[in-house]
Image (cartoon, rainbow over all chains, first blue to last red; front, top):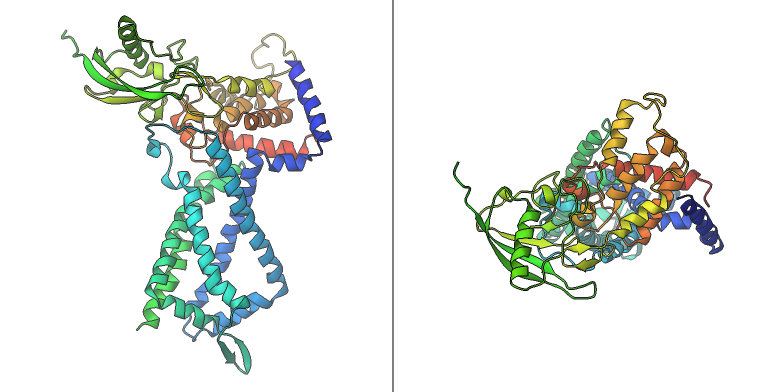
Length: 247
Length: 256
């Protein structure tokens, strides 16, 4: 028995020679990768809230003034710019690690069962996080192309408030949301997001080792509420704008 | 007392000659099965039939047949150890099935559990995880007098709950990622929560998780299927404890 620990210590010395730091080893272990998924996921959960608060200004009945001024602030403020790069990196890491983990997890069961009945012991969303995430990713590409890319690199309509000429993102959004199919795509993506969050929110805490009878029931309730309310409000905006723009 | 009516069943069983054989599902009929038989006894009857016909009997793992050894390992109708919660295959009785049922029986499926023959898989990957750190490497002496080392009741209970893991591998079989987190977490918990095991807590969790990864088990997606299908109903809290012990060990242990 003692020999095993000696061997273990010996091997870890060898690994040190292999020039792989403890940090690299930790982050490439199954638990380390899960922690990365969890932390990036939690960051994206916070981002959703910030994004939603900004978007809710679209509902203001001022012809888009509040939203446009907000959009200008978000694209020019230095601090926001720095955090936006952090956000892009977080998205990329969350996606790349999900692909790595999915590949590892798939290879852990090379031949599947002839008859499997998983529904009784786990939730549908918990088993399909990869599929849910893929749909959200596809939506994200469309979404970024329509608004983010246009705002940054496209030719935008302009408007002016008190002599200040700024890009009229509100008009671009209003035009997109006046098309029924775009509203359908948007709302569908929010449904997928809701299911993704319903598992992801509470799962992130479990991965970080936060499981306690005082906090876990609370985390689960907040997670469920969050995964319904946030995508729900996101989905409400295009529906509302579709009917007001087309009336 | 009236004789209980025997059941007639259709079995679809995984047959595989050896580790390199491709294997396939084969259909068998069994008749006049008593509802009081255990699932394994029903297989004994089927094997008797096969032997009489001169066919190769179905290989399956079993030992104590009282739910404590962890040897039986059948994936029955899409669930490890069959339809009942908190029950091993040997403790599953035929009264839980209906006359005329079709029952699918497969081996555990995981890269780290290669099929040896038919329903028997090689679970020595679990042994290697234990060998990596699932022990206390100092002599703890004889059993001490009661309460000589004070251990709070709730800690003792939690460690004992972890120690009820029989290492059958149902968690791996149930998990969509064939992850061994619940097994490894239970084995980490049962030692690391108690005074004798605390000394090597950090080394243990690092070594056991490293071995678990090396064996080719998947990562955890927190679906909870492992705990739901565990015959000993080991809680997911142990996985959370292992996660935080592992992070703590990686950040603070002397092992660079």
